Amino acid sequence: MKTKNSMVWRFIVLVFYRLIILLFFSFAIRLHAAGETAVNFLRIGTSARGSALADALIADASSAAAVFYNPAAVSRLEKREIQLMHIDLYADIDYESAVFAGGSGNYNFSVNVNYLHTSIPGTVIDKTNPYQFRSTGDYSFEDRCAGISIARRGGFLGFRLKYIEERIEIEKANTFAADFGILVPGRISFGFSALNIGPQMKFIKEKEELPQTYNFGLKFDLGNLDIFASASAYPDRKMSLRAAAELTVFDFLAARAGYQEIPEWNGDFSPFTFGAGIVIRNFGFDYAVLPSEKLGSSQKFSLWMRF
Image 1 (cartoon, rainbow, N blue to C red):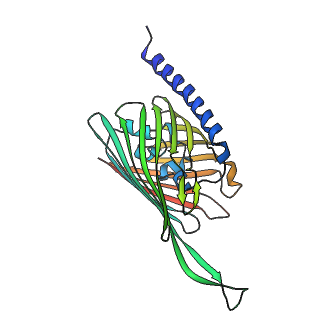
Image 2 (image 1 turned 90 degrees about the vertical axis):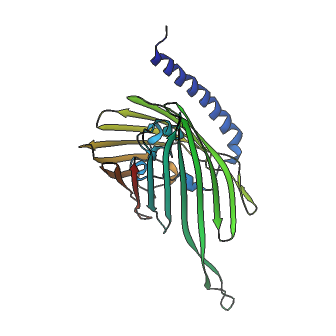
């Protein structure tokens, strides 16, 4: 008679095998579309904790911060949680997000809203002097995403449906996309997620693919120390690898550091990430910094409350 653990691992192996087949056909079909994609803000982590840990939270389910990386994480949340985040990105770009996670009956769910915005200076050639330009004012640039995730409480699978919109002044484009995830918790947790699966996005006359991302991750629970490792595959770029560690001290203070290998960065960003978090009863504050000598460091702040 098979034990419960052996059946779980057989399930993992079967799902992993089928996902490999799915990825193979997905890349084969979409190989012609390799290149830049639209709405790449969807690849920016929406929590300071996740960013401090190099966005390696594919197999984590300890907070609503993990839901962005794997919608199956919502299946393991035990309390309702609200999280608010602000990112001070390079080039005067701001990014805000809000997440609410809760449950009803046998299901858990989360609702998220993300909003990236900046202004772009406009210029035209000065007709009185063709060697000079004159300003036409600033143009607003905005990206939005709203989604809802659902998973059976205590289950292994999660699903998220989201609406995406990009706007430059009066011109805009929108579409829908879906995320899928698997999470098997334990002292060694396993996670997989397929993000931003959906149709092309048409802006004016140009059509672009969504930034599809396929994540594999592990989490090693060593008591007060958690170790994270993940790999991300993309149809439009090379694979990236990540590793991170989170040390919890006195049950209210966390120190975090991570390393990410992303070939396309070409030295513009440091591969190292850092951050910390503090918990006071049911309230928490997280901070992360992503160093960059050329573009300036990005800082992320998150506030959360559980009840």
